[in-house]
Length: 367
Picture 1 (tube, rainbow, N blue to C red):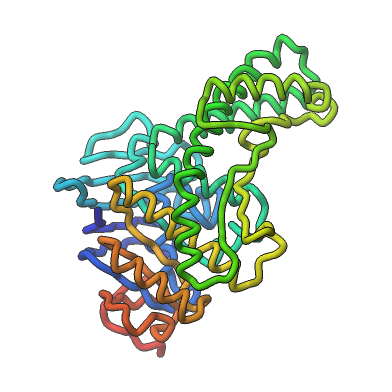
Picture 2 (picture 1 turned 120 degrees about the horizontal axis):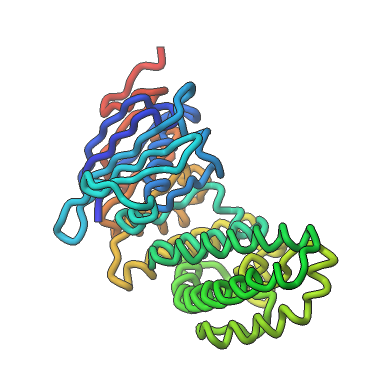
């Protein structure tokens, strides 16, 4: 899989930008604030229908506009796809596949598969559980785009059920939402448990390759014990657990069971990574999660695009080499860097130089 063309209209700092790409690594070099990460973000948005930087659409739109367009030409499986996504400030986004309007923007999920790595990934190790849940769910959607609907429906159910709990709605009003919470939660839990089991050996192997002393492992940590890859079993366990906490839910006005309360547990030797990992170990774990994700997708026949956003400046030589080795496996990689010297010497790439609003293969003067 590779992106051959990318066109941005009123996306972030770009009123109009058109680029063509070949296989292998492509680097965007420019000062902080120049707009290089905006290019990476457009590809990430196309892959996940969400940004890795902001939760709302408005910051994605060029100042004074109410709509942005991302258009990409993607080569995969010996065919070419054109994907158009219209991002709107006040109404639902709209998408096209090969010029044909889709009923929902979610129909373009899977057209572009990416694995990205950015400095914010330290939050996967040090941050709150929401970062790790989001990591798992994005990887689930990359593997099986249909799960985007399950995740979206589950989030909607939790929000509505919490509203009813806060207003102390009667049991007959709560019951259908509880049933949906359990059914969707059982399915999402089963998918996450299976994903973590498949991902764990790749994370462990990548961490060991960084010459760290303590072995790394990951596991699924749920608010309900003994969840498995079996949806029906999970539904029974969640039902039993919900009855146990029903009174507490009413008192606290919140849904206390389900995947929105779960976490991805990261382990280093005998200790949890969070709170015990050094700065270097935290980077190694973050790298292992991302490269492990890439390895897992590749083992399943996918060819995801790799995006490394402003990351080489943060890493020492060993960790840079680990990432560089992955770029040699990937069919296409996009890399951003503030200065050219941040890039490993052995990394051969097509270089673009970025100044505000302008992307050029020639370095432009700062004067």
